[in-house]
Amino acid sequence: LGYRALGVAPDAGMAWRLLGLGTALVAGAAVLAWVPRRRTAWTGLGGRTLPAFLLHGLLVRAAIGLGWLGPSAQTTRLAQGLLVLGAVVLAVLLCTRPVERATRWLVSPPIEPWLARRLRVPARESGTP
Image 1 (spheres, rainbow, N blue to C red):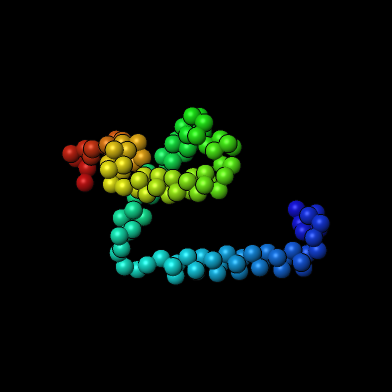
Image 2 (image 1 turned 90 degrees about the horizontal axis):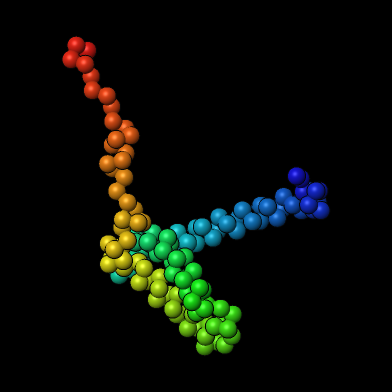
């Protein structure tokens, strides 16, 4: 597909593509500039984001199933604010060390024994160098 198939002139399409790539480059540089180089109180939480990333969906699905996150729960500004506050608290709690320890078997199971069996090199015969 070319730009003409999308109903856009090629020069305008290329200009928008370059603008998008430039914007992405600037946004990426801004994020990297924003990340602190020193260790802070939040550094440990940032290093434990995998459990939060993998487990939050299960908790959200459970809340939807229980009716906590239905359309009626988001009708007022107070409800919306509480929802955002609850999401932030949940994210921080899921990044804590106790949650990491409790879910390590699920989030990052030990693969070394399995990997060692898969990569086991056959023993050499005594007569070969």
